[in-house]
Length: 399
Ligand code: PGA
Ligand code: ZN
Image (cartoon, rainbow, N blue to C red):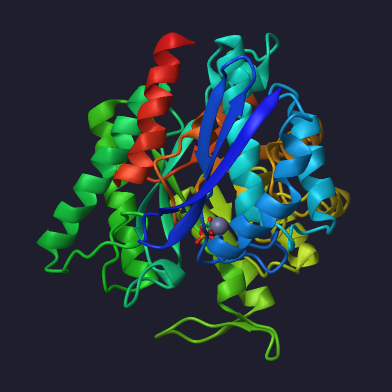
């Protein structure tokens, strides 16, 4: 039984305050977790409140429904109590940041009571032995860096790696290789929010540089390393004009955007394209998936915001073959796991993901393994990213 929930403000990787929760149980179980925070957030995400407000409201409304009321090991009851305390459908009362911190801390306390690793507690005995392939952000711009690429993220995708550990080191090598290639071209190397290189070059040159680096490391390592994108296209979309805006290039209509993505998938044999179109355009997503869905993953992040109702709409329309899973977009682990399960029943591959603002919390590494997600996107080299990657290395060693 949960006996105590403590909430505090801690720093995230951008230096902003975020919510951290401690959950203690009667039998001495303890869990601690912190909420991440996005910059290119989806319009339909659960609401992140200013941390002080989220903490005050959660103390008033949620903590009394948890302390002495719910077992930490009973995740659905913990998360149902959070929803009941909030009373809205988007956590606008207690804040998705308070909700997700408490939800994740309770899961850790539940695992602690059992003496089981979190991934095992979340996955159970029928978990299987699938490990996620890590997608590593190596070059980027968009909302994550000024004066850099239009496309938000270029992601190294070591799809042929024999283990998670080798994949993680390969991504780090691709990241290092890119800085050498950029140096060779006389391009200054700055970094964006997630530690990816944020060079002042156009998207075309970034494609060349990333392809060169992944090819080279792939040859050295002897396994396939592809790459992919998070276009975060909702950030580029001008709804009034119906066009995607590219700095230093002509705008693209929706049809031109689809054709452009098809062309790039084919030219670079890309393994993954996230949010290539606006977050409300399920139909354009469906056209793109129809055209290249048999050769690449088309992933919905802002499109679905980890929400099962939006995912169901995407399934019905054939909008994508992949979904990004961000627990803080929806507010609880239960909602995130439900989205993963609805996806896997319908052939939709899950990519468990960090946010651009992160902490040293490693819950998503355990969630990806526990829920048998085929991919995880959690950066490449910055400390708050390596926290998750190093946890994956440890999980692989012990699982
Ligand atoms: P965000 O970006 O965390 O800033 O929203 C990450 C993403 O779009 O995947
Ligand atoms: Zn995204």
